[in-house]
Image (cartoon, rainbow, N blue to C red; front, side, top):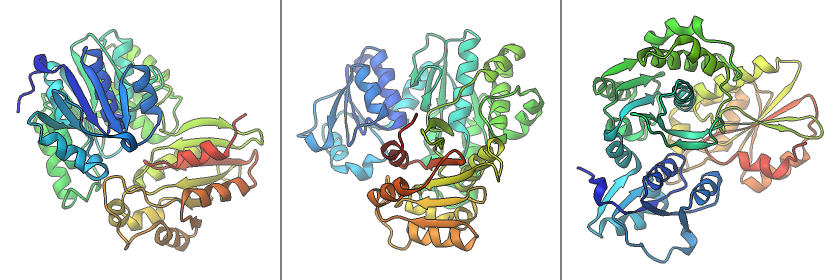
Length: 416
C-alpha cells in the first residue's frame, strides 16, 4: 500500500470528531488539501475543526457519500457507521483507517512515537513542548488538546513528527520510528489481543521497527533529574523522565529540557482542573479508564488533598464492555482513594451491548471492597442525583473515563 500524496486533493473523514483522526484532518488541511467529514455529534474537536475551515456533515443529515480522492475512517465507525465505510470501499478509491493513513504520512518525517498502556498522551505532550522550546519545530499529533498550543495538532517545519502511537489493534505497527518510547505494558484491549503475552509480542515488534528506543528501564535513571512539576502524581514524574530520555537522544540541553518540563501545564482531560463552584467545590476531569490509571489519578489527587482534608467524589463511566469484564476485579479495587463512587452506564464506543456486564454489577463489587458506590441507569438520573448532592469547600468532584462523564459536570456545576 503506497499513498501518493501528490494525487490527493480531497479527503473525506468518516468519524472526523475522534481525538486522533481530527488531528490528522488538521494536518492534511495544513498541507493544502480539501478536508471534510462526517461525525455523529458536536464537541471540542468539532469546534476546532470548524475554526480551521473544515466542513462537517452530521450523521443525522448524511444523505450520501461525497466524492473524494481518499477516505479515512475512525475504528469506532466500524460500529457507529459501518454502512458509510462500506460505501467508501465501493468507490474504488483508497480507503484507510486513521492509523494506516497516519503511517503513510509519517514516512516523510523522523518519527518519535510514544506508546504504552498508560501515559502516552502526557509524555507525547511533554516531548513536543521540550522540542518546540529547543527550536526543533516538530509536527505533533497527540490524543488530547495540549494547553500550550490549545490543539491536538501542531504544524511544524522541522524534520520530526511526534505522535501518540496506540497499541489498539496493533495500530502502532504502522510506524517505523526514529525513536520509539514505551512507557509501560499492561493487559488492556483484550478485545483484540489474546492475552498479556500477545500484547508484549506486539510491543516487541514495535520496538524492533525503531532506530532508537526508550524503555522504562532506560529512563528510570532520569528520574532524579525531573524538576518540580506543576502536574501532580508519581506517574507524571515517570512521564517526565521518559521525555528527558528522548531529549537526551536528540542532544537537547538537559537544563533547557528541565525548564520546559517545569513549565508544562498539562493537557485536556488529563487530571484537568476545571475550576471551583461558588460553594467552593473543586471540579476535575480525567480521562482515566483503566484500573491502573484510576489508581494513579486518585493517588495524585490525594497528594493535593490528603484524606481528612477533602472528600473526593468520582463520577466514573466505564469504557467498553470487554475492558470492564476482562479487568473487573481490578476495577472493583481501584477506587480506594475515593470517598464516593458514582457510575454511569458503560460507554460502548466500538462494541455491541454485552448483557453479562454492567455498571450496576461493578458498583456492587466496589461496595464489596468497602467503598460507597452506586450506579445510574442513564445520564439524566445521574445529573439529578449530582444536583442534589450537598457539596462545599471540603469537596472535590471528579468526572472520570474515556467517554462522556464530563458532560454531567458541565450541565450541573456553575463554576465561580
